[in-house]
Length: 575
Image 1 (cartoon, helix red, strand yellow):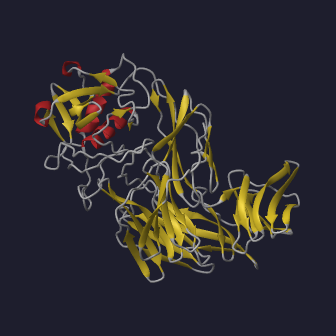
Image 2: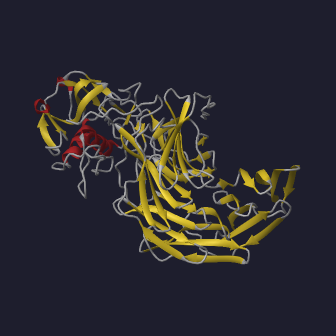
Image 3: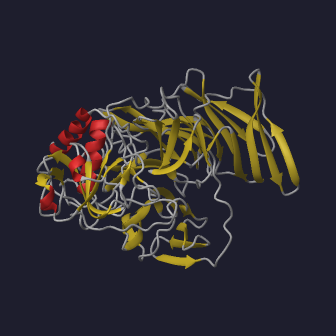
């Protein structure tokens, strides 16, 4: 049976280790949830009662297709088998399922429904089957404890038999229910052939800032509402096509997924990977050499100009630029430059030129780039470098994957491409401005336990591959600029030993350091930070929510500090 794994619950959500290694080239994220034995699955909607049993048989067939694969703790996801996690996972190249991983996979493959857990309404959406005699092929069956606290799960195949991943000594097999060795406590039917779920929403457009992320997506046919997930946590259900997330922190990485939903089910999700490392060009709050500034686009379509309002040591000033082109709404950014000035850069014309306006606290100047390759739109980044504002991205194609940075220097524009290499996992890659003003592009590659970082110093590109490291859980994993070099930090360990890990690419090579075990904190309220002195902190609310615990990594050692009981203000929400 699946070992009992009680996860630390903070009232808002559950934390789970992700085991998915997704396709790097055509990646689309699925919400991959390892569901502990302490809660029953629920789908996002209810199933109609007059169901077509052929869909139930498709669930059985999906489970049966994995016959012989080994048991891996926390193994399996919507796409298939995986390594699992922790010391009980499968090592090396071995992949497999645990009992809940197999059921997640089978239901999704047959129905397209993403099963989630719900701590308050554990059986929401599934038709509960209390009597074994009422089971039909494709129903999920649960053993030991109660429906809200089961110990094992499988897929009912008919005639008293189930497909399951029973334990470490037995691979995915067909068993009789009696062979499980635990009492049957109930079943749930998540399949239906009646009615259709909505289509997938249209692509997500993003306006990203250090403290807020504004999402907008296309309408889905047949949708009643939309469910918005951040890093696999359901954050909101909305009726419209927008969501403003104001619970983000600067210099973080987030993955947003949106499901369309109606009475017949949920769509496949659409997803977008977002970094809060720059200020999208709607309105931005910026730190300048003269003081805090609020800058934005002003005028109208017939006279498109910019304005910056700055609180200086002698009072407020407001300066507008000459009229120009605001640029593509999906591809423009405000930047605080290394010299304390402000730049507004955007693609214009046919999209192969960038126009940058710069405000030095007194005057505005403008510069148009030559016709350059700015790379693919996803993962394209606007960065403040030691040489000036830069627009960097992935370029080339699958057979020749390289990078490009285009920089506005004090002597004009330059464009430099890297040698071909691996773009890395679409779900786990990041551009960084290093402490020395250079640029790094870091990403997980291979089987996911190595990071490759390419660095551009304004003239040349260099590349370095990490050893095989533990990079922690995907949610809350962060790419950070530290005094010692680019770092990849995350939560590691498990519920019984919750610690942190930072892996840093230094001038002398890679290092990996783990903290002492501590409390990961509330899943909805924790953040990695790069401190002013170039160290790293991980801060989170803990206990009853009126204390914050901060762990700090200085490149050599970890230290920890717990706050007194404070008022931390409102947890802003938007719907």
